[in-house]
Image (cartoon, rainbow, N blue to C red):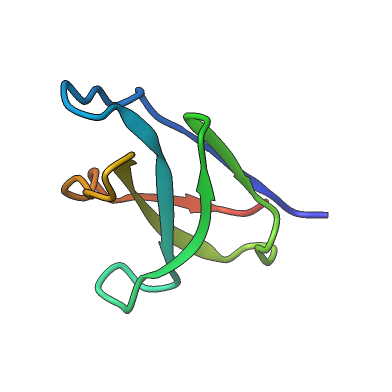
Length: 80
């Protein structure tokens, strides 16, 4: 089974505290990004990928009050 593992530096929030992260994915760099998962960890393994296909990702942090951060930088990865 194919998978791409993402990891990032944890966010900080001086208010209500970071509750988790939303992971967004697209099959085109300038395409429509859809949320594919939420996690409390600062790593995520995307197992819904196809071989030899490139995917683009970004992450947003959210806090306990429901506020979202700006998106992270966009990164790409190609499944083996």
